Image (cartoon, rainbow, N blue to C red; front, side, top):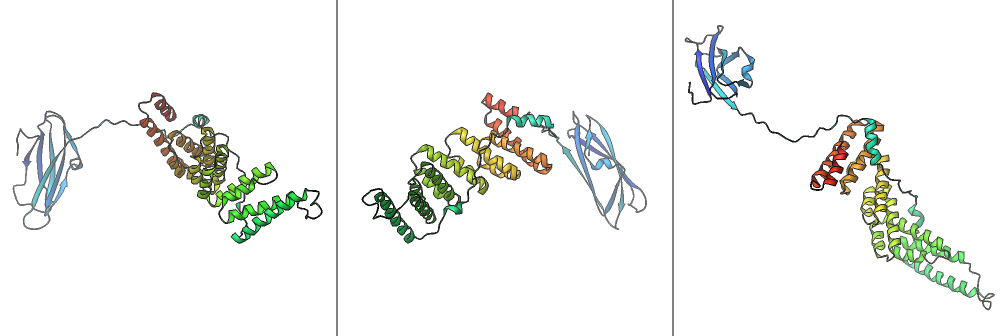
Amino acid sequence: MSNLEQIISLNITKFPQNLLIPGIENKISIQVINNSTKSENFKFNIEGENLNIRFYSESFQDKIEFSQGETKNIDFSLEPTIDGFGKLKIDVYWLNIIETLVKVQKVRDSVKTQRFGKILDNLNLSTTESIEKLNPDNYFIEMTKEEIFQAEQALKLMKKQHKSSGSAVNAEKSPVIVIEDIDYKIKILAKGYLSIKDPMRALKLALTLSEKEDQIVLYYNLARAYGMKHLQGLIEVIKKIKNSSVQQELLKQVVLDHVFINPKQAIEVCFLIKDKVTKDSLFDTIFGKVIESNPIQVLDLIKEIEDPILKFKYLLNAVKILLDKNEKAEIYNILSLAIKEVIDFIELHHDNKKDKTIGFDLLK
């Protein structure tokens, strides 16, 4: 069996010269020589057909390392299980151990509270926008189109009578119509228009109230109420508004109204805000309220934004709340995602030294 051109040589130095008999030691010894010019690793698989095999050393059933030119013996015994013939099979595996150098990054097992606090100081949410509650049902009055038409005619008549009552000639003939009655009729009619899904007419009516302040309050409240029930419909109306400041203010109100109704939709509308400072403040408001009520929901909501620094910021603020609640399993999930976002940011900006430094600072 020996061949110096081979990596390994196996020589049987002891083998039973008689029949294998149960109850006696039928010992076999195999001499193994490493012919390589360096250390090698081998694994031996010895099986028997109609034979039980008992090894004298358990180590030969595992990987064995041979130094250059080293010789080792494999000793075992055989016991027949039936009368007749038995078969002994020896497989030798030459193991090539591959070592690869990979880049690794150790994630801290724990973060000191003081250190974590300093990180959050730089990533604190800005002062969130105040959210004024509004019950949309107060701005819908069920009216048919026929009822609305009659109300429009009645409103025209009231305005005409009010105008004529100011004349000394007609003062005695015309019933007294005060401006408060007209304003009341306008508010009812505007709410009726919302019920038949005509928000544009409702908003125009709001601007016909006698007092400027009342006009603004009703205008925005009608829009907010409609947006709470028909968001996409209101967005289409807002896009048609030519006054940019009014348009942006309405979008801001829509975002704030949907923080609790549907924060995902609030985020989508937030992207329509042009002013970055306002937009960032609204993002902080959305995520701040969500983190307070259900920090785990942040894992889903951050999918709606692309900025990895913002994602990291909101994830860490969620971790702060979870730390207070001692919810360790959720903390691990959120921290893992936070670190991934920063690593992705570093890889994306590997050519930008400034942005790359920001990413590494976040990981410290």
